[in-house]
Length: 122
Image (cartoon, rainbow, N blue to C red):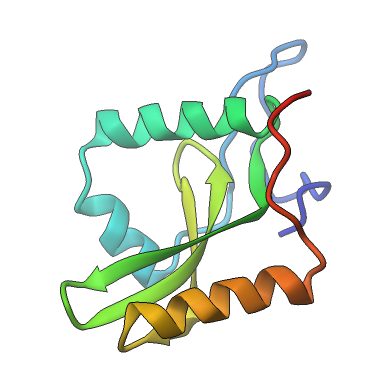
């Protein structure tokens, strides 16, 4: 989903700059991740990402992460996402057996998409 594509987002109330949420169902890896985390902490993270993304919801360009999905066995590339239901988008086709390969792939995605580290000062 592109940051400019809000057709997949639930509309916030008129006149409100508030954290939205996607109407796209989370994938299996995302469900496992979210269900294993404290709901209040996920909400806090989502609010921080919303602020970090200049009060816009959706994926944060250039903000790729590596998430351990099976302790000591499996790592997945994800993208930070200002969304209260899904603060990280996990790419199911980008799963690796070690964190180094996942980190390399995250950097490759960023380069392929021509994205840079998100700017925080506007």
